[in-house]
Length: 516
Image (cartoon, rainbow, N blue to C red; front, side, top):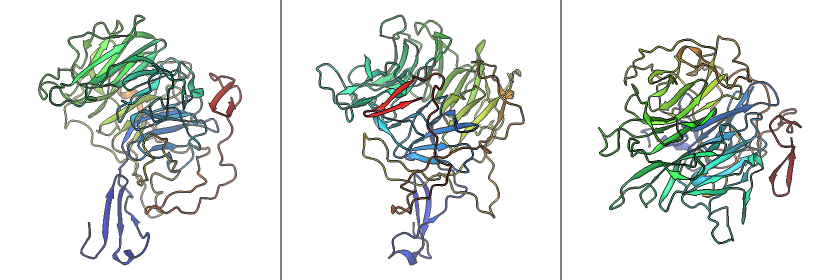
């Protein structure tokens, strides 16, 4: 838009910029207008321990804005991987180990906090099998599901047309050329694609959709959705007439019982969409043979995330985060007192189970501390318009060039939000600092979780290294600024030998060996 004084204003996925008329014949001259503007939209997030100091390292996937990393002690977040960003796997023992995703299941791993990336995708752009009968993945959705086993962080599953399993190789997983550690364990069928996957040991569940046209109904191809599993020893499609015919957005399996699984659905009930079915949250205690609608008093709105964790059932919806007791699963209550009323993309639990990380679509990742048992409020009013108003949250990011499709994103290591000016008042986060003590012992895998036990915690006051790039940040107009000088003592340390839960030697990539 051009204003009457000749100033041109630009709006993009990365925010708002202006350029005065006097600079039209020049290169550059853009003014950053993003202070206080919240533009980030998180699809997923996880945390891992900061081995160089205290606290946890936070990773988040941002569509159109790559991946953000928040390191303890740093005043701003950084972007070590560009392109589209979605879900993420982070090693609980060491937050520098991560798996990220570009579109259509283009997976890449890092072992050093984002300084370097290795393509490990089973899609056909990267994996070129030579043997007859060995497929590569060409039908992964724009946002393709993948995740770690709830009982073994080294075991990963992913989904496109095929359900893929990395055979428990963890960060030693490699896939390039004609060799790939990912193995296809089930074919969902031509024109079908996975929308959600989860695993507990040898048991895997996969939600899928299909029409013969990649989940896009049209003409004589009606929309179809379902759940497949190998519970019981062989792969089969779940036959349950009460499950909705809508997208399965997420599935969570109980770490203590692979037969206990909860599936959640997007969109709205049949009141709005003919033939879509009713309900948003369904629970099974027999490996998917029978399902119970436990939506209860939830609003009729999309549910995007689910966790069986911390002694509770927790869902992320388009109306925020809600929880229920496993003994009263239809009685949902709003979780926390400071969470913004905003769509939620993902839920994950801290490495020591002391807080729940909530990834929202309004530029916020909110860590909420679990401090002990207090009875939930059963009369919480969950109707739209009865919720707390959204709080202020971290600001936006700059737009960056996209990588070539199917390849790992090019790294951009720069602040995702501007640092406050000296004359600028502090902008509060949506999560308040905790006034309670430390969380429960990390040896306790589950603990009670309810509305009053969660105190908001801001991710400030941390110490430790931050990722840096020798290439330097990118200017708004695409020209590279001079690299930021490295400060002594700021380089991430080498992995610690003998770290618990890690193999003695991990194959990172051809020609590269790392010891832990």
